[in-house]
Image (cartoon, rainbow, N blue to C red; front, side, top):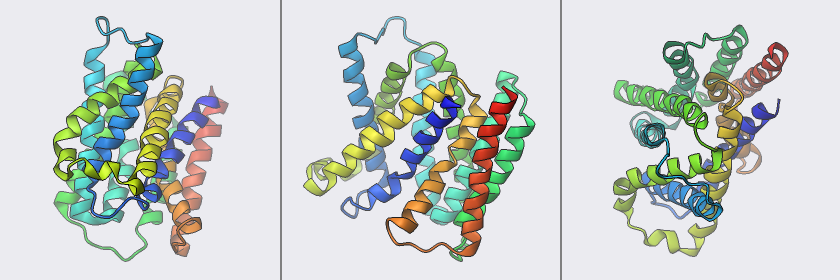
Length: 285
């Protein structure tokens, strides 16, 4: 049960990112935020890992680390691009909804792990819930290119999860997250630098960026990878659908946003999928 709880807490922390971003000054690009967030999260853990003497560069699993860093960097880039073309609702639904499917396919094809009945039922419930939760604002702008890019983002998050599971078989959690996100920050640096770096030192932006760097990156991904060691990647990705659920509920109870009746049905189905996966998987262990 504990590994599932770790992944759920990680997803809840990711879900606070949108609300936290509301406290940043306007006009900062998503790529700049993603790059600085990765640099803070990865850099802080890298310092800790070096102090603890846990970084063994000579014998490090560089191939899996590079694959993890590239996939999580591409995920962020593709996701933000899909939102630009198709809007937040469509981009989020296609990205987040497709990720569990891609993860199950990758796990089946490359790691010979067949999807379980519990996972299939839970994933269907969660994806339908995600669809009902987000497509409620009358937004019907479906750009084929945006959908294609969003599918690419979903595939990249699924790839990151599966690759990270392999990385965790070879390295400890703390240094694995530190190295992955330090490399991710380097990969995102060209896009992040387009806005310059002066905005980072603006007092209004310091606390939100520290929260996103430490809580939603360092802590969240350490928890996610700790849980990932004990459960399969496809289940972890399905559980990560708690991220949009958290974002929606924070919007209602913290920001005063409105959810339609259809969206509340989506909330119920998402929660049902998470409960089915957590309790059903425990019953079959």
